[in-house]
Length: 246
Ligand code: XMP
Image (cartoon, rainbow, N blue to C red; front, side, top):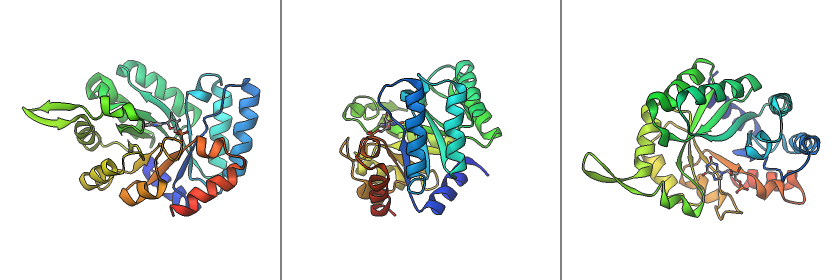
């Protein structure tokens, strides 16, 4: 089963759109491990996936990351690595080989780097192993407009940078697109142009995004970190967001 189908299956089974960002505050590796595993046990019925960012990828090693990903799989959750990968293909392919060996199901990449000798080989390699490539389309933070919102010329016609990233996602046959929940009008625009690539939306609550509006606009999955991780009761917070968006 390919990544997008596994993601859909997990979401339907859990009746949840939440991909939990395990964005723990800096701590000793052993503390990060015990916190991450405990949170996973607590929220596993309220979420459909986890997203692991530099918060854990930098301090933890291969075996520790594997333990977290294995635990996610035991709970029927998909595991996404958030590297916003943006290098030449020789490097991207080495990085993703390590991620696939750890067991990650998908990785977030930056389409700015281009296809040839950029993300192309990485996408082919990922698909040969039923793993997913999720590309940035419009990020959730305020400064996104300075890059993703730039006016660029394409064949003499002015378009937005995110228009190019929408086209790339379709041409490259990627498995997911990131569009910030903070910009529901852009989610709606992307959904109108692309029917069959799932939209993942970060930026819920702490960055100002409303999960219900994002889903109404067309998001399939909501990436949520601090609103759950830093709450007093991770399970209750996750369940509230789950219930308001299912
Ligand atoms: P919060 O605490 O705001 O964290 O729920 C969101 C998580 O998602 C990451 N993030 C993004 N990742 N594209 C991404 O690929 C984005 O536009 C984006 N915005 C936030 C952030 O680093 C954190 O892990």
